Length: 185
Image (cartoon, rainbow, N blue to C red; front, side, top):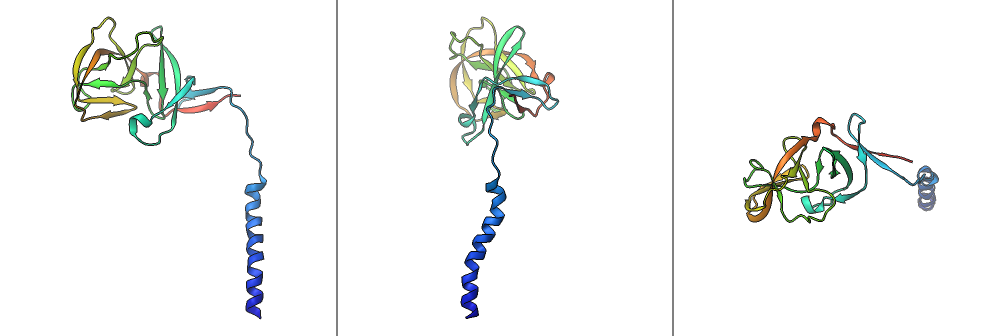
């Protein structure tokens, strides 16, 4: 009889314990507020820019990557759109004729010339911003590696139409990673 009584009491006690211990979780109401503006800041609190939207990196690393914000910067009187990850900037691919992302810098010539913003790429050293050389003619190169989203991707074997690129500035001299987001009202 004691065993039957114990079995009968276990179920209600288990239910009661679940309710008591889960009450704080279910009893709290989440506060949800709209965010009007999101700002990207560096590790020193310096504003990198206000987000315009963003991009996922799935096409780069072939995994479920986070959504990375896009900011506009003014560099030498030019507006530049860049995506910002935790430790680096990126936009387009920086192309190389070597297998290890060394040597001459190139950007794709297949960029739409009607775009309002110039084609830029970010690569080594640091977070150096590269822009296609003004009035440079495109040419076919033997693509063997590319740099995008903070990584060198080796072992390519392709011919591609490209334009020589020149460095503008290492953004690490202006901003200090890691970057984070700050929500405004």
